[in-house]
Amino acid sequence: MRSTGRLTTAVLGAALLLGCVAGPASSHPAQDKRVLVFSKTAGFRHDSIPEGIAAVRELGADGGFAVDATEDAGAFTAKNLRRYGAVVFLSTTGDVLDNAQQRAFEGYIRQGGGYVGVHAAADTEYDWAFYGGLAGAYFQSHPAIQPATVDVEDRAHPATSDLARTWDRTDEWYNYRSNPRERAHVLASLDESSYTGGTMNGDHPIAWCQDYRGGRAFYTGAGHTKESYAEPAFRQHLLGGIRWAIGDAQADCRPENGYRPLFDGTSLDGWRQAGPGSFTLSEDGTLTSTGGMGMLWYADQSFGAYSLKLDWKMDGDDNSGVFVGFPPSDDPWSAVNNGYEIQIDATDAPEKTTGSVYGFHSADLDKRDRALNPPGEWNTYEIRVEGERLRIWLNGVKINDFTNTDPARSLRDGHVGIQNHGADDQVSFRDIRIKELPVKGR
Image (tube, rainbow, N blue to C red):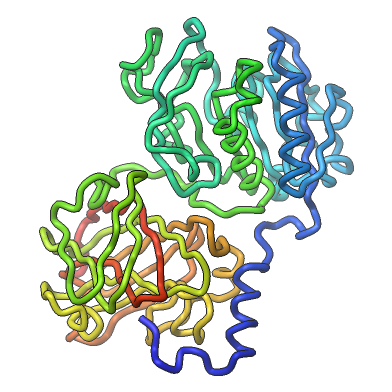
């Protein structure tokens, strides 16, 4: 929702937009754009390592970060590691760091450093528990190199946002000693029916991310072959992982389990348009608003206590919102007057800007600015309703905590919807999913 006088002054709007786009993105200084590629091996050595180093250098040249490469474990000192936004373990194998070097790297991660593990990084440091947790899982075995289908589970993270829902490619597909799903956020998994030799009983993560002990960790099991590093989709996948690890892009990397889709990219069964305008559904499973002011709402069921997650992207100074807690109605203004809107609009007043409970409660703007990806990139909301309490996470960062006191807007039972604001506002949505929570306080 946007009021007719949405900007107090042009200066305020410009300042807010600059804050959202240019605010600091991680615990590292904004100028810290250097990556260390580490490729020491004490076991099997992949002949694709030179191609991998060259690819990361090229990605850095295009992506605005400098790249150093080494196989000297002596680079792992506290002083030297402070120079880097992330360390890429590129198909390392075996025991590659001594105790002092391990302690230095642990300190680096605890102080906000980034880790990117590629392929055989999971075949590294089996006796170092900190590293095992950081990588997410250890290598167990692999079948022959062959084509397989990758199911992309998260389409907002920069490592996977440009991929289709399924990704068919050839690689050496690792089996892991444990499943990281309960500890890490799975970005993509293997369809074990699409190839032979998978041993993870149909739940086979192959790329994931996590916030770990103060730092950021991204791992991809792809990247065995030389050809991988010339493949545009894989290069973009790797670049997205590096960008997130160094804090250039934000994403929700908390573990995500127990959600079911309300909109999975293929069908709008259960949804109904209220008011003018509509949403267009593209082949890649993206809903984009057009016209309005209207709302697409989930009519099949109302909800009490729940966690609602969805991915959204705006192209510029666009406007939309997510409505919660409203009664069933084909009048979009019923949601405005009887529910609450979680705003998407980076250039409005504090109580009417992205992350606010529109017109009622501003987000923590400092946290919002650090968590927000700029126009053109995907963001993830978690909107959690428990009793009359409404909390909002943006890309995994809690930015708002509001308690309703108006009986006419009770959150204890209501519908959810997404807004199409007007002809000049195009906002896109993906992967709307929900997890119902135990009801409290009745």
